[in-house]
Image: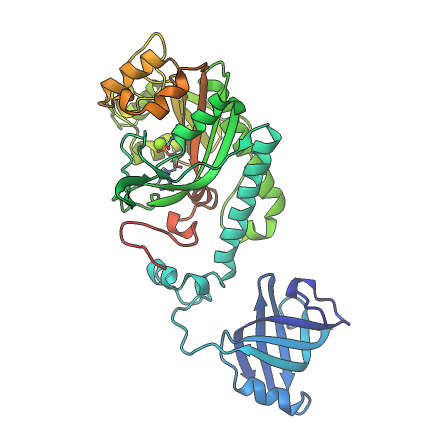
Length: 433
Ligand code: 4AD
Ligand code: MG
């Protein structure tokens, strides 16, 4: 017999289902087993005196989370969750589960995140936790669908590199035979390279490594970057447009495809109508009025982002805001400066419910100016020949953005910790499992 998922059961049918024994209860002459598979669960009901003794004997020995199969008939039941139950004609144990279970994951007893992550594969058997990854999987799909539909080329670039360009983000050194190399801290150099290679519009979804010793609820040392880059732009607003349309597409897709999963989370998700765009100067003025004072050269800190998200939401009704014209002081050398103001850059952050989810910019494509900007930041462009070269043989105004998929999922579901949004997090304290 072909296997049937618990979501496909129809009364009157004979079926074969497979899954885990999530819960086993005995009540008088009745035994109930909740069989869970990836689609949901069904109640298997046994009755002493009615069910075959051989089956009752197997069930007597069963532990929670034993993996097993049931053949039987689906019958309507008022008491059973889901309205149907399974009357077994055969039960087979596929593999036993040890007792006791190392973590509780049924939601009745709260288990700390650290312990949950130690046994992540068990933790994922909780429908809420699995739902996070069903949604993440759909966000990934929506992202590639979006870029493909907009004519962006999907690229894969090296993660073993010799240099990085993101100021502030630390590099992980690795031994590369007898040389020192680094894990990629962003595909920045390569995506610009491929725009100049004639692709014009590229995107990459790939691991990004940052040796940041930060213990926050939104930083990881390895995360999944969503990066895009595009050539022949008018200005940085073209780049923001792509960000905005991507957000609309992803949220629209999730609302359509993940209705059941979203119900588990206490969130109100809506497609943005128009994401407001304000300059850093305007943002700082708004914050100052509320008592949060930031200097001209300052970045927005986490507290500032949070407050700004709240103020903008009250003002516009949107959960998102672009802040642009970040101070030169806080941006890497490759961000372009506008003609009329060398103290700022043509760059932006996209903030969602008070949290940064992407950073983008127009890049400096004029070699001489780029070299000068690099020098200002203590970088010698002559020592970065592979990067410098891409501006010497026909370059053009271009720009792009980096998002973090994990940060994305955290913000969309309003999770308390980014570690919930990634299967197996890497942070300064964790390198396993
Ligand atoms: O702001 P970041 O460092 O920008 C860049 O990497 C540039 N190359 C982007 C560009 O094209 N101009 O990183 C981009 C995004 C952040 O907004 C955040 O969503 C995520 O990547 N991110 C992290 N996510 C998890 N853990 C970390 N340590 C992260 N660092 C950045
Ligand atoms: Mg950033």
